[in-house]
Length: 159
Image (tube, rainbow, N blue to C red; front, side, top):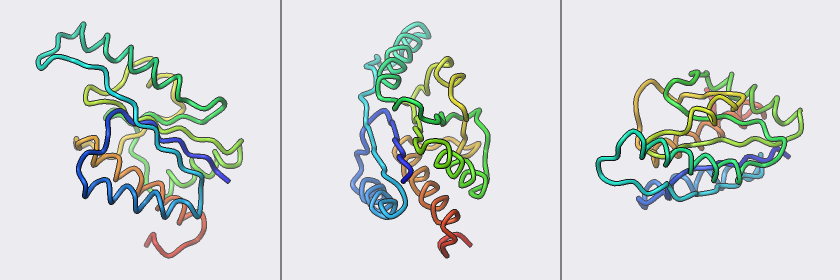
């Protein structure tokens, strides 16, 4: 069974978004072993300097690397990433299942993630050219993972 580890900075605070995440996490149990790891974002002042942001991203990179499973195929979610169709994303996850069965999806903090972490990911993935709050991006990502699993299984969810 595919092991999917979603590593996200920050907690899902809004009840309605936690419920949506919980629903997709429950549905995914039939297809994969999902593990959601919430890491605390590095603290920053209200108007951080570029140097403070870089230091925070470096600290977050260290925490993300510690949470990555060995041998996992890694996708970093970032605005400059590739926009895949649901079918393409499904094929990428299916390939991971065939090659060892472990995937890590990285969802950075509000300032994104370090460039070195993004460069070392196998896939830079964009959910959209639009910007979403991180909590909503998590719901969208979980829904797309569920949709991808349904596509692979030949389910009726994806039309």
